[in-house]
Image 1 (cartoon, rainbow, N blue to C red):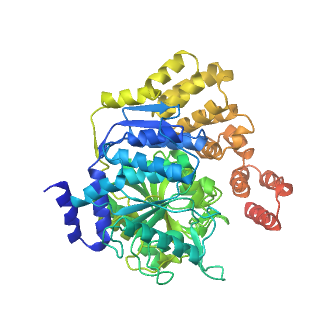
Image 2: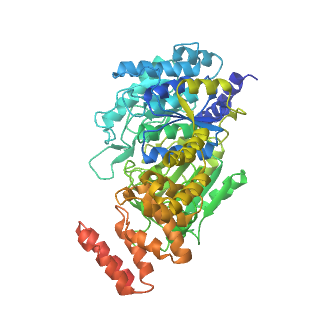
Image 3: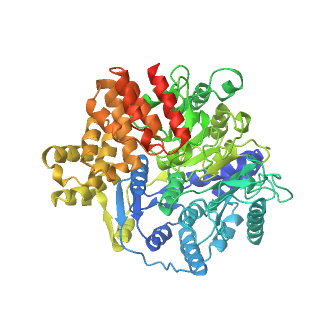
Length: 638
């Protein structure tokens, strides 16, 4: 059978599985060049995408100069394990104008080149593919003036998805009205009709929508507080009424250009092949339908490496202890907890329970299904559970934007089964015939379990010549050259970006010991992260002490301090760790952090622990915070 015939044979499968099977076939058909390209400009990103040749592709990451972008790029590289990484610092040759028309033309040109270099119109290339039986199961909906265009272009070129252009809302990320949601549904339908694609029901040509522009995650449907639906659970439904019959599953990007490009590239190039499962629910009643142990057994039976925490190891202390020991190294996370936007309850937890800063570090990019109320109510805020997961590297996330009630979530073992059955992620986390509800999907709705192409043995010379002509620097060699030249911060960054944490630890440890004056804030922050990933918890403290007071306020850095500090306190009673944690309480969870420290202090002196908590009173801004402080003090007294 030809590839087109294999692709067309999917029509005989169950309608709810067809999109996943088609997406999986497209993923398997890729030929992957083992290099990662880092760009810093829109024009060089367009050039890099244009360098894809049909099924032959390589990952491209966007660096905007932030700590988050660097950590995400490094996290991707650790999972992808390329032969080499190249950074292109110069603007590219592709035109990138200021108007929507100019940018749309540039996007179309890059997509056409990535699909078929000889054909200047991507619509013609897609029609040719369709004549062979190959039709992508998804569509990308994009505003060319929006930050997320680059992520949308990646999925369009990576999955051969057509683009429908719309104008994003005047107030990005704000709650939508039902009329706005219906208008987007209508615009998407019109665009698909113009492309000659069928989309009226699940199982036809288009079963997935990726919203690549800044759209709110919620639709406000009525006057009551709980009158809200998830945007991605309404977009892709019939227009006859709000919550009509579904014809497509949807996902939406969330974050900066650099973050959303990371999300898209993870989905295209990284397989789901390992799992971390945390079940914070009791093994009784309806809670047991979401049993993490059962989900782990299902995934393990398919050959997937799993790490499962369930009763009796699923307490808050256990969660904090697991995070402190090492990063979570899994491509799929299944987590069940009670709670709200800014906290998660676990067994044997005090009032307030776990906070966003208690979430573990991720060694590699992860997909997350979280059974937890409100986790994605405000995903742009890292002060929330969902926002912090995204900041820590989750690239595809199913969670609730409001109170969905337990039955609103597909049970965790069933999610595992549906993913193993090659259902696309957005379908696996929703009930097949369910009404529009409150479960949102952030990221690529078409991600499936399975291989992401076949890797080419080594980087072909033609690709090396192209990126070198664009001014690219190969980071494996450049790191060595920078080290010889004594440019230590730059060398450390290149080591981080090429999966050389052990080199960062060796160099960072030597510099902090012998030449600490050469370790600036940026170098120290990178050493903190690499040292924790390498299990060098004492070096985390050494590097953190070198960071200036203002630079210490970085969330990513503070979280690493608290994880390493917990490890040092639990294992060795490290007084230095205690001192650093006491003076670096994290924004928006100061009381939770302070109570954790006070409990340890109370082993030696209850009055001293209470005095430490009382010292925070004048910094509290609300009566509610002061009452919470009083309750924490009472728990210490007990």
